[in-house]
Structure formats: C-alpha cells, structure tokens
Amino acid sequence: MQTEDDFDPPAGVAQTLAPGLRRVLAPNPSPMTWRGTNTYLLGGQGGIAVIDPGPDDTGHLTAIMAALEPGQKITHILVTHAHLDHSPLARTLARETGAPVLAYGDAGAGRSAVMRELAAAGISGGGEGVDARFVPDESLPDGARIVGDGWQVEALWTPGHFGNHLCFCTGDAIFTGDLVMGWASSLVSPPDGDLTDFMASCRRLRARGAGVFHPGHGAPVTRPAERLDWLIAHREARGAAILGALRDGPADATTLARRLYTDTPAALLPAAARNVFAHLIDMEGKSMVRARGPRSADTAYEIFA
Picture (cartoon, rainbow, N blue to C red):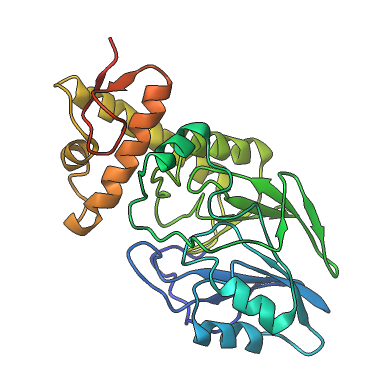
C-alpha cells in the first residue's frame, strides 16, 4: 500500500492504477495541492473520460493527449469542482477533442443560502483560486449517470469544499476531488466552502461505502471508511476547541486560528482562519454562537446565551 510519504510520481507520466484507470499528475505542486493535481483517465478501449483536467498548463495538456493509447479518444470531460487547479484546462481540452465538459454547474452553483448571502455582501474566499469563468457544457444533477465505452459513473453532489463539488462513483471506487484526501483535511473557506454541507457530504459517502477513494491530490485512499471517520471526528473536535476558546471571551476567526493552530506554519494561518470562520458559521446556524456585528471573518463571535 502506497502512503502519502512515498507518493511522488513523475509529473506528466500516465500510471496505471487499475484496469481501465490511469493517473497523470499535473506539474503544479504547492502547499495546497501536495504533489500536484491528479488527472484521471477512465476507460480501457475506445472512448474514455478525463476526470479533472487540471490547471491551464500546455505541458499537462500534451501529457494527457500523449497518454491516449491506439484506438482511444476522449469522449467526456468530468470536473469535480471549479478551482483553478482542477477545471481551467477543461475548455482547452474540449476544443482539442470535441468532448463536452460535464460538471454540477458554474463556479457559483450549489452554494447554500447563507453562502449566497455572504457572497452578495461582498465576502470573498481566502485566495484558494476560484475558476470564476468556468461553465460546463452540460450540468449534472445529483445522481446523474454518465455511460461511456465500457464504463459508467454516477455523479454525487457533495458540496462542502466547494458549492459545485461532485464526486464520481464507478464500481467500488469514488473519485473524491478535494472533499476527501489522505494527505490533508479539506479546506473549507466561505463563501465557496460550507462546513455544514461538508459534514453532510462526508457522512453521505460514509453511508454509501466504497473500496477506494481516488482524490484530487495525493495517493489513493485505501481505507475510505477509516479516513471519513477521522475527518468527521477531526472537524467535531475542532468545533469543540473553538467553542472552548470562546468561553474565554469573544474572538474573531484569525485570533482563534492563532490560538488553536499552534503547529501550523505562518504562511498557512490565513487558510486556517478561513476554516475557523466556516466552523463559526456552522455553529451560528446551530444557535451555539453569534456574531457581534456583520457576519465576516473579522467579526468577533461569542457564545450564544
């Protein structure tokens, strides 16, 4: 079993993960993307699907096209969500191949009511890179089935990391995008991410069951139920820690992040603060805390009494 510590495949080289499934790593490593974005090629003969084409990178486009074997052609382009490390190459790949781009919706689709309110108030994300121009050729509703040449997938709407996030299921495998990864917990940054939705999506995958998760970054998750249990417990523990910190008095998301994420590098504290903000909104919706002013990451929150 491959671990995250030894996950370091060469970028641009197609690697077989299972019969009819290959992965091509994009050349975009970073603290937020680990080794880079995983682009998947699903299908053995004839028409294949590309899942998450990745960033707008000419070299990665060339690598995807070079990975096609004799007799293969790309017939479907599936996108888990509209972040800059997952979706921008979709449009170029569609022009190159004639294949349609399929996703839940555009970059604003799938937001919860509270996140729509935040966006309307001018609250923006934490710089994680929204592909604001992304628009699919076909929108996939929850439960949609896409049938290809010897393969089929079911689209599951799984908002949380991003409003338009989809997971794609085939057999006992699920392509989980950035909802579930083995190397890190998912970033949840309002108004694009919603912790209430994230927890519901994790529990949905837990109830469904799977043999393996293929994430947007990092190695395959070979113990999916165990990973989901950890993610859910981790978020619950973080919420409890935030609530405990607020017993010392009102505080904003950045102050709480500094207090709670003591082992996090300074460069990643802004992302940690966005996660805290997501927790505060979730707890506000449960009448556990309330904002002492307009809802924002800079507003102090206090325990609801």
